[in-house]
Amino acid sequence: MARHKVEICGVNTADIPVLKNDEMILLFQKVKEGDAKAKETLIEGNLKLVLSILRKYNNRTDNMDDLFQVGCIGLIKAIDNFDLDHEVKFSTYAVPMILGEIKRYLRDNNSVRISRSIKDLAYKISRLKEQLTLDLGREPSVSMLSEKLGLEEYEVVMALDSLKESVSMFEPIYNDGGDVIYLCDQLEDKKGKDFSLEERISMKEAMKKLKSKERYVIESRYVYGKTQVELSEELGISQAQISRLEKGGIEHIKRNVL
Image 1 (cartoon, rainbow, N blue to C red):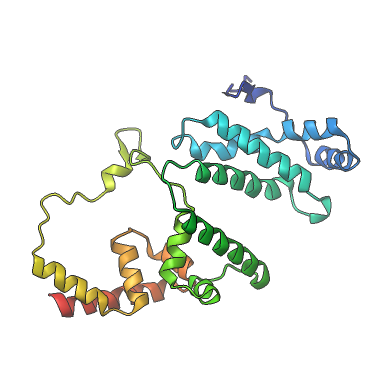
Image 2: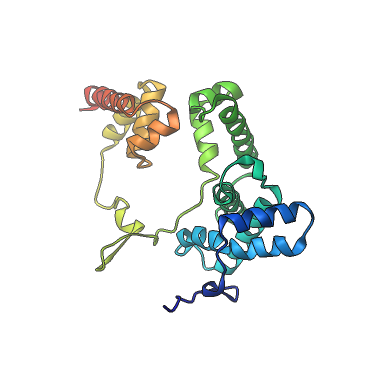
């Protein structure tokens, strides 16, 4: 049966070998002994890992060749650092390293410029988050991070959000074989919505009276469009608690505005 040919950087994916587990073990043993040829074979035999990760970036960049090269750097780092004593599959170990390399490249070459101070804070928070995850065996909540660093919770969230990739307004988000729905189709059209000055002032004052966590949930849900599940993971509390905070905030606003 003919294999489908895809070329990235001149690499024909149909020609990429697939290594069996016992072959991988033998090659890693040879790499440990300094065998450069074995390392080359490992790289070639795992290029499909890189390509599988690149699929999700097809519509986000036109520099797929660059991303492929960056992904290969991540793959080489994974090979250099992998230890058979880890007792995990190489793919399980390598994928986060390849993905991390690609994300760093996209972040550093992002057309949206983030101030150095925000980036530095974001990296500091990320390092603390990684350390606490190792110590606790789970991801720390935003409130824990803010307490450790002496910051407001919103400062922690804003800094971490700065590390996320920007998405094009013309990113396709749904396609059932007919018309494609793009992200811009889901954005609010503010034309024709004219709120009175009194309404805007009363809404602003009502928001100020909310508890900090209620205010954050309301803003995240209705300004930034986050889901309750996302907020639950972000704040380290249950979705039911997020729902109660949201309902409580809305009721408070209704009493003070409507």
